[in-house]
Length: 386
Image: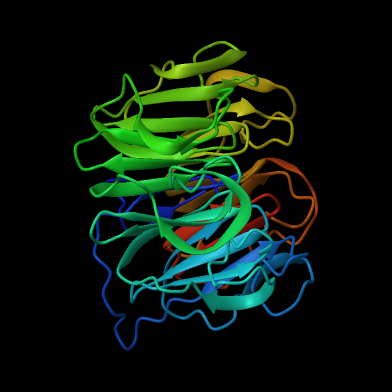
């Protein structure tokens, strides 16, 4: 869902989020997996629409294996559906599908992964609220699913589902993508950013446009109604909704439509945008968080309220990636390839610690994966891929 982007130095881990995705840096090519390179995926939390991909609709408080995924390169969680990019450059999808967000040509819900039709040579995927994006090796971006406010970037909007991938208009040199609640972002090779759909502006924009006052960008992340850009100088700019301080500029104000610097934040390696909160991974492996903290999703050890400037995530050190769901957060440890950390809302078991207890401090996800490369959070479910 909201995008979570990978650390430039710790490039072995991809973190994505959209209403919940995801950010996504995708510079590496995709090749076939080695014979001994098994890369399964697990999922945990809400499963009412089959978004855990285990063939059931039972919620899970600890991770369960996603059916038939053994060559997973990246995972991304939408509202009630999930995406997986395989090492061969194709895409699998499962869960809710009322808007065609699974890309299989139907609007039929799936409890196990199915193939997104017609996609190959994919470098990255990002799941939005109920639409999906895929970045191709040739720099083009494909989209499918809901398009009522132009979130597919085709130049038009429609209340009808778009159940097969279509080309996002006018983008041919993208190197990263992120799908938010109702808008998409694409980072271009020249360091500029294109946006489309509806954020908080009165008018939806179905045709991609260049975001003003923004260049030298190295990563992007789209939240429900706000966006983040990591710059080449390791600082961060933010724009969009700011009612809960999610832009990190020291205020909780009306929306801000021109990107502005997040206060007191330097040496950033990766960013993630959740529903109404934001995360940053610093180059020393610690983290910062700001915005809504109603469910403890900032991880500062105190529940409730919000923070309008970055605060330290308590106890996070040696991290290599971060990801944000609607109101929960995830991180990967650098000390152990198999350790996933979670905090925030846990009403459906989306923290994977075996409980339904809300957490304002880090807990360890009970995952069986021995090497985790990718994490992401949706509304009330989470994904990890090895």
